[in-house]
Structure formats: structure tokens, C-alpha cells
Image (cartoon, rainbow, N blue to C red; front, side, top):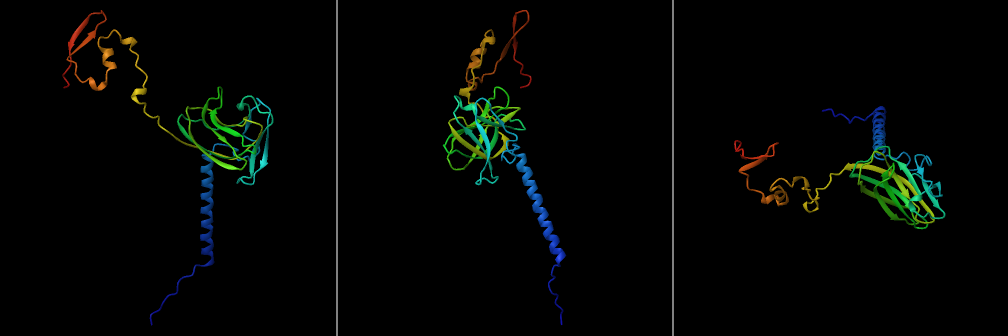
Length: 251
């Protein structure tokens, strides 16, 4: 009678080895994901896990900050900005986080953060130069709600900055603004759009007034200048002019 072989049952060691390999692969994938997120989130303390570390607070107007519990957020922490008497200028109440890298002109930047305000106060989120005159590179203004809400901003920087910072302005009224789980990702640099012809700056011909016919030619529609020159006028150092036949050797 022909013999039939029974299916091979993997032994316990084989199963354990396969399971261990799978767990190691998952762990490495998680570490790679965390490293990628860290590279694309250049804020050392955007989730406030380490308190106020990495943040700078303006001193132009008295206000208070406090790390508070935020059960809605994954990190469980948030920064509360408390304003008593509102300042004359809203920018006098600001919290800032320097970026470890500069920003290019027309660089795409994505920012996500959780925000709320029991008084529904507005805030302005700005990317700006970290040195005087603190020129804004992009900004977003939003009116907050008493409930936590996730805000997702994608913006394009106007100019380049060797040193840049994220700034949150909260001096628009008395009350509290809470912010947490801030993430910032740097994207690609977009090419500048071509300038339409009707928006080009006019060409100055002040230095070319002595050249006969040149001003009229430059001011004309380029499509109308199609007749080749048969003779070219040149000017010598002595001031005398000569008329030379056009070189047609290459035609």
C-alpha cells in the first residue's frame, strides 16, 4: 500500500522564533516612525510633557502661564495662558518656541494643535523671524471655542529666515487660552509663479536715449520686431560712426 505522510507540525521553538521576529520588526517600525515624526516636528516640547521647557514668554505685559491637565489630548498636558487686564496691543501677550532650523522662502509648513478658550477669545498663530524686526513669515487668526478643537494649518512662508520661531499671540481680551499637542512639519519649497507681462515693472531707458531707434524697438511688441537688420551702426571711441554690413557668414 502506498504510504502517506502526515503534515508537519511546527515545533514550539519555531513558533516562538517567528513570534519574536514579528515583535522585533514591529518595534523597529515603530522606532522608525517616531524618528520620522521627530524629524518633521522641530519642536522640542510641543506637547508640554516637560513643562515650560523650550518656550519663551514675552515680558511686555503681565500675564500668567500654567501647565494644566487636559484629558482630551493624547499627551494629557496643555499650556494655559491667563490674561487679566488685556494689553493695549495684542502682541504684548505672546508665547514663542524657537525652531532649530531656518525656513526658506515659499516653504510649505503644516501646523496642528489643540486649542480652546472658555471666553471664546481669538489667537494668532505666527511663523516669524526670531530676530529683530521679527518679520512675520505667515500667520493664521482663529476664534476659539470653549471646547477643545484640533486646528490644522498649512501655510507658505513669504520670505526666508535663518532663525525662525513659532509664536502664539493671546492678548486680545481678558480670559484664558489653552493650547496643547503642537506639531509642526516642514514641507517642500514651492517655485515662484511666473509674473504676467502686464505686471512687469517698466524698463528704464534713461541710459539708452542716445542710441537711435532703440527706445522705440524696446517699447514695441516683441512679435512686431521681425525684420532683420541689413546694416549695423557702430560707435568708435573717437565719436565718429561707421556703417558696417551685417555679418551673414553664418546664414
